[in-house]
Image (cartoon, rainbow, N blue to C red; front, side):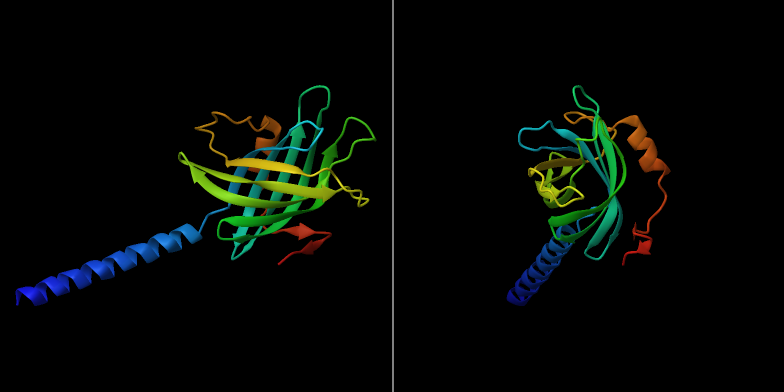
Length: 189
């Protein structure tokens, strides 16, 4: 009888371990991308630009939202707003900016690149990160110099080590209540 009880206890422990392992795997594969991600992008021979992704919609493997690019330091100051769509696969994502919604540039010679990004999700020291690379082109298809992307999930309680999002962009994000992604007067699905 003691042997049966020991085997039964062992079986229960194995079963519980399998459930916990499956639950841990399932929760890991369900990363929540939705929200605000702040940081910067780089480009060779250029200045770093502040960059914020507002992922408004996350359904299945599809994400969509608004990207904000900005630089408020001399000698070059600019900002732009772009709509984007993307796909996620566990801890990696592909983001494609679709169109420039708004831009403010210092002169007619500078343009905002429409970017394609490959980003990886990571979690370190209680913070979530999206990091990777981008390339892209201008509206006229002129290639841009590719660079890197460094984003951290927005957490106003822990701004340490990351450039703050400009106040006007935070106001725009908070005022934006739309959830549907539109492009050229069409709803994307």
